[in-house]
Length: 166
Image 1 (cartoon, rainbow, N blue to C red):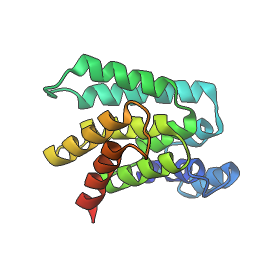
Image 2 (tube, rainbow, N blue to C red):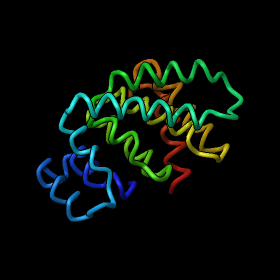
Image 3 (cartoon, one colour):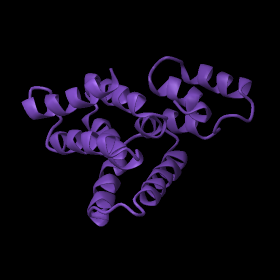
């Protein structure tokens, strides 16, 4: 996870209580984003700013992307608009594809299908490896309907990502 979002990520994943996340943030003095723990706690102003930052960062990632950029932007905007601060922090925290996959699985286990979709779409754009992009895009497309683990194609897409990392 990104070091600057570590306290908020720990709170978002239920590892720390919000007050402990604030204390950890203060211990890391200046090395973390101070607005993320309030986002996890549900501060609507901070959540709105974080949503906008996620969409802006996504748009920057799409520069030079040959696919249907407008469609992907609209899809992400729709997904992000439904996410709470806890989910937005998880969406922005991974530093590598393995962490991205772990967060997708964590979201699915916890019934947060919208976050799983957003993480898969983010992974399809964020990584420069063609294979990673293809595998995350496949997971996103199979998850687009319902993220049902009973769906054989969705399980295959997740298995592809898993086997790439082991």
